[in-house]
Length: 127
Image (tube, rainbow, N blue to C red):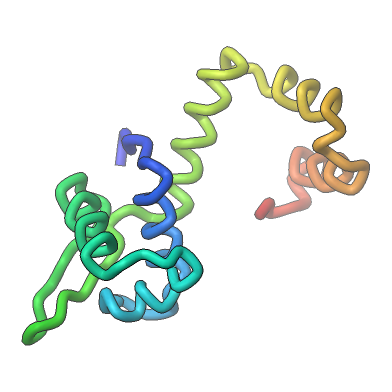
């Protein structure tokens, strides 16, 4: 996939619940359970899933009266695209600028720095 559009927060939460699912396709009921803390109603979830389907993020299959959903965009691909866009938009594409901002705000720990060093040296896989 060359370009992935940025998802609104609610749609991203639905995608995260779908990506966390162990097997596909996932039923809307299973997704409702995964999103139980949101206190959304079923029509809200179904509307969000319809939007995701229209945008090409999920495929919907019918099985009797049930709708089943499969992600068409891999979590890793979406995160990579979002990360690149975040870096470009807020830091002019400069990774050192991002790291400096995190250091200044104390949002990055020494353990985080050690992990980053390991990743940059090729020894770590990242999260």
